[in-house]
Image 1 (tube, rainbow, N blue to C red):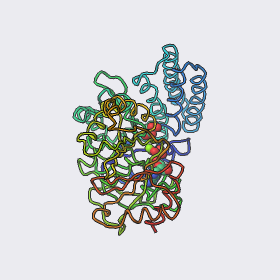
Image 2 (cartoon, helix red, strand yellow; image 1 turned 180 degrees about the vertical axis):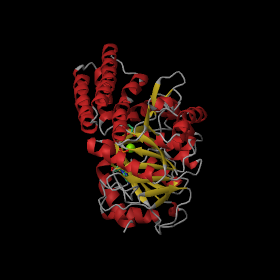
Image 3 (tube, protein in one colour; image 1 turned 60 degrees about the vertical axis):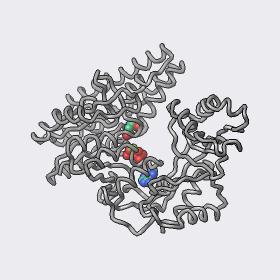
Image 4 (cartoon, rainbow, N blue to C red; image 1 turned 120 degrees about the horizontal axis):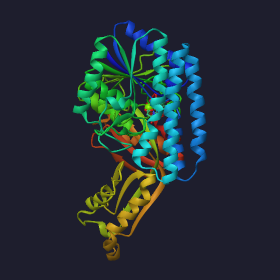
Amino acid sequence: MRLVMKFGGTSVNGGERIQNVADLVIGYAQQGHTIIVVTSAMSGVTDTLIRAARRAAQGDPSAFLIAHETLTAQHFAVLDYIVRDETMRRVTHAHITRLLDDFGNLCRSIHVLGELTPRALDQVASLGERLILPILAQAFRERGIAVEVIEAHELILTDDNFTQASPLMDETRNRARARLMPLLQQGILPITTGFIGATRAGVITTLGRGGSDYTATILGNVLDADEVWIWTDVDGVMTADPRIVPEAQTLAEISYGEAAELSYFGAKVIHPKTISPVAERDIPIRILNTFNPTHPGTRIVRNARANGRTVKAITVIRNLGQITVEGRGMQGVPGVAARVFSAVARAAINVLMISQASSEQSICFVVENAHAARAIEVLEKEFELDRLRGNIDRIWAQDRIAIIAVVGEGMKGTPGIAAKVFGALGDRGINVISIAQGSSEYNLSLVVDERDADSALRAIHARFIT
Ligand code: ADP
Ligand code: ASP
Ligand code: MG
């Protein structure tokens, strides 16, 4: 089979783990599979880079100096652990030093300008993957494997929507195939960075935080892979985040639709955009655990076998705010909802969930906390006259809320799910602020106070997953 294998941050976090990755890949190659490796940055590195750049823009020059030191020590330690060959060690040291010098220079410019543009942010953020790539390559070379090191901006062309770039699939297909197919034919193992792309002009972009998963499926699509394997630190997609619900169980198989819904509603194990490139071509994804590689993990396919449960998983998204537009005069006035959402869309604010009480006296919707103040501002402006006329009484935000999403294809047409969810929460005295059901019926979402999120998740999980 032709397989794209992506390794997440924890899987490459240290010398021993990197060797484990190399051994895993080589084991599958020896079984006759053709493999393309995609790597994330070591865990925490992207956060460190971004934090340092932000601090530099705020006028703090020490943060990037400290980050520079930490990142140098971290990467050199791993390199020294892995590379025995003196010449290769020197060459790789020099490469890493150059990348870290770039980091220092970029942060110095950001500091001088006092401004961090999305374009500069992507330059900085992309360094995490680029730093680990040559080290991972050495782990393969030390084992006698011929590898080609390719930074993904050579492969993935994107638009110039910095920090959230989208791939230009046709051009990416041409580029990636021209670069990778000859290598695969010669039995050379290509290893590349996740998360990164480039504009047509060659400027580095990133695909959004956690975007290495997306890189893997983009490459899976353009290379006609048989499967995409995402190696992480848990045994697949589980019925809930195992960090919050220790008794969460692995889902053996889920559909593309369910996976998309789960990732969109907070299951960090897959980046929300990951599904579409492979769903388009019916390429299965597997989610596997590098720390437990014999576990079968989760398969994500078009039509998943039913597992006998209506609710498959429960997720949570935090750091949200709920905006409410309310007024007795709204009743029967046409177009209020359209005006609310047009105003918010014009301000480029993403709406995660909408609910309207049947009395039509209020419209509620959920946005990221960081966008709440701006949403209020644009709505106050939009409804200025209506406020004066008394049609709209109040526009307000409730911050520190979370969305809990209950997801499963089997929920479609099954009565009593909502009652069971409310029962579970009622028994624990957890207040539900609002509720919405997606039109797909795969998903029932409810808003709770952020402080109740963990107990709400556990309560619903205990009720449905036994
Ligand atoms: P990687 O670095 O491999 O990309 P991430 O940290 O991005 O890994 O994603 C893996 C993490 O996702 C897990 O450690 C787990 O805590 C979290 N997670 C959240 N929801 C789920 C879920 N439903 N199933 C599995 N893991 C989940
Ligand atoms: N390193 C990037 C991030 O932390 C991409 C990824 O890990 O998938 O967001
Ligand atoms: Mg991830």
